[in-house]
Image (tube, rainbow, N blue to C red; front, side, top):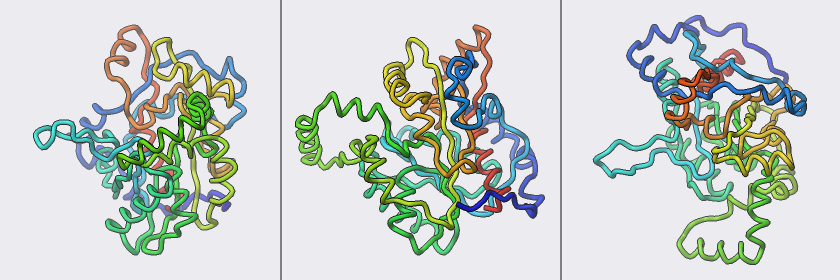
Length: 332
């Protein structure tokens, strides 16, 4: 793993204030920002959190005026059960974007960004092949920065693309070492019933491999040993941790993962999210859920929170723009 070296020759024009480009778009993107209300500091009660790496509490509470532009294009690839655009109303209504507001935020700064759709229920291998083909169809003969997950790790390490070159991979809340919640679900189902479910899904042409690939046993004993990092690719990662409320959809999954792995975002533990060594792990986003990470925050919930005196401490758009800024300063 190469040491992180900030590029001293980042062009001045790549760091101009965002507001210089498009005031109207700026206000629009800020409107779409995803935020999380402040809460009691979970690491104060759980010393494990501070032992897992740097803590990020309010660094991404708002969008800054100035961000540097990366040298190479950014590729966004969604995770399991994700989608590029979901058409709920056919051709008559606008589609629901997976990267809600995030692509617009990059475009605001005139950063080159593409999103590549892959199978929402495919295995890692299938999705990696689709990802590679999708990038090849959009960008050839160029270097790219990727913000994605396990599919990209497989593509970089095992498929070794030749029509483009990956210079960095940034993962956010990715289960690099599997998830205790996946173990729990498969324990409830049982091997016999799981086989029946797989057969049923196969008959209707739905690939089910991705679910079993999220278990800790598979990731730690099969995937990771056979998917080593590549020396000339920079690896960065972020984790997240929250204390879910009584009505949170993550209440049960968070409890299960916390008992087995420690602090987590409701689906993935901080420990599992860490990748790229100590220098590659950029920190743990405190008070942030797995859905917050892709700007899927419930607007009504945050409106009520603000009315009760809570302040917003996380803006997903600020996180992604800062990742781009970090890549630019690394000469990427």
